Image (cartoon, rainbow, N blue to C red; front, side, top):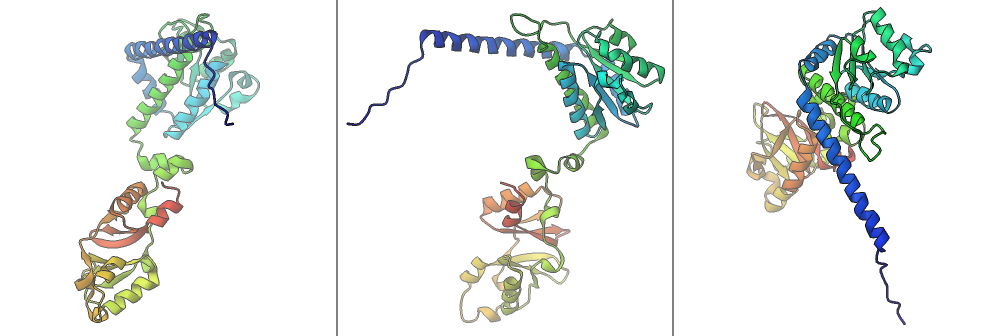
Length: 334
């Protein structure tokens, strides 16, 4: 006898827990979304002043904070560094035990503290004042020790933390994180940080693969399969066979690509006189091509859409390379 599968129905208590959990999550997310809206509305002339200080730094932006603010500071430092603003995290407690040596007069300090009264920050704050190191504070206490000492204070709106207790840093750290992103992006845009700059800092992983350029994958020089457009097909087939791209490009007297011969073209013109025909008689005119500066992902998309396996790379209508579908797949593009 076959067994009948049964699905256990949630108990009333499980249903209540699920309902309460969803309600709690929605409440927290809406509370934090509201806080971010308040933060955006509260931005004033202090924000561009902070950007001016950070743009003028010839050293690094030292980001610091204690506890949960310290975890956010770690992320802000990483985001700044990856978007063209040299940055590092310094733990405020460790700073008091020798790590102040990491902070130089060429740097600026970005300090995070919701209350602005974090005791562990005091030595670092005093150090910046002694050596005239620019200090930017992110705090909800504009009149706090941090807020009063900072050259520029980015004040967070005074909102309650999420949850029924309202004690654990949640809403405040979300605002710090978002404000750090805003600073990093504003600096990126002011500096004119390009996609190519971004790629230099993200060579690995999926992001690095997505930013690969055709020029980095294409075959160049003697590897490019080319014949004159008036060459006989016996020469074209030999070139096509030797270069193993499954195609050969035809060029005119000025070196401009005028056509391409593929396996399909050979089949369409198969006959006893094929070897005596000229390349221009067999080739597909005006083939699909791509620029060396294009993203490799674009080349992959074109080849997939056209059901082709190779693309000639042109500069001023002249072939400077060829890229294969296999090159893109081998580089990890999908």
